[in-house]
Length: 204
Image (cartoon, rainbow, N blue to C red; front, side, top):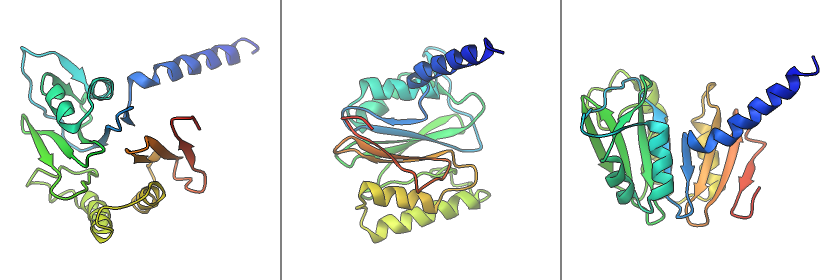
């Protein structure tokens, strides 16, 4: 019994060291942010002449090499992107206010630019006209869209987290509010919104 706790602790440390390689969302030193949300389908295009990246590796590549939303889009266009059967779409944004949603369905990549100073994704395909069967996702999307329209897209980092709390669900594992200008973020785990972890360039 004295051996296994140490082994388990070592395994947890190894997983923690590997965590930067498997992001689900993040922000880099330029304020560029990328986030992934689940959608039901997974049928991205495939070009045999291009290398294939798992979506987490693709997000790591964006955070490591891109400074702007357009640079990220151009970078991802060089690869096949795989969601390994768990569909998804990406939201990419930079401090200039430029953002885009990248969706992968019907064997194509659809790039949706922000028509306003904000952009929203939840768990349905924004660019797919046949998404009427995903109404629960639409309700959460509409709530966020209405709130941002009311505030003209201006929220501080605390306000962003408060809005995320309003659309969280039982399965929400974490919520993050990014400030792309200061590279600060507020993080909440398992909907415990009374317990906020604040991260800045100086640390926690």
